[in-house]
Image (cartoon, rainbow, N blue to C red; front, side, top):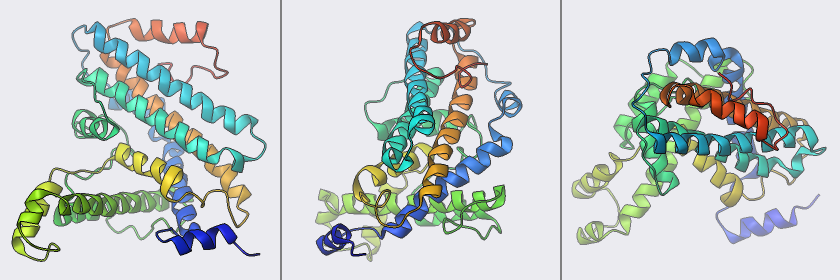
Length: 321
């Protein structure tokens, strides 16, 4: 059957191949869900991870930010759950489910930052940078959400990716059926995000005054590479950066791939369920950490208040400690 719209998009230029875009999208989320469902975000694991997190001195303003952001994260989880339960055709809602997934992760990450340092960021990029410093590098988020790169410089990033991969042979071409296959896919998404963020930074550098002053066209000369690597060394990759890229691909660049062409109904049904499972696991981790940091007794008051007053049709098990 002819694909009129797809042909038109290809003729217009930079359009991802839908089959590969679809495969990478569903296989990354399948891999994350496989790991989460293997127990990494179970209560015993999280209790052990956050056992030695110290309660901070009372900071009412920062605690309010924690509760506000966690409520927004919880609301987006409720959206995903409703899509799972109520939508007869998951194709209709899969793109919206990705958006809810991202914002649940984003608001939960913002809550963790507020619980850690109390700082507030104006952009999603700034939030991801602070989340890495406040949470990831301090080993305050469980696997698989902890994988990160400390730099975008190729030699540094490739060494860190290699350490994560070890002898694992799997990548995003495989639909994960066990934790080993899942790990390979997760590492592959880290690698792909590094490649994208490096390219993005290089394109930005090429428009800079400093680069133009070198009178070069690329990074072949040493002076150009030094300028590039100075900027790349300030860059990073973490789960929140990956999530932002993921949402962007679904919402903007690869606009056609989720709901066009081949019938992958069963895969889409599993995909929306995986979005829910991954979101729930991330919120459980954020809840554990935040509850250990806010003023003693206030987390229980927060959860009780949500239980008594929310109009959302979802239980409080993602928040309860």
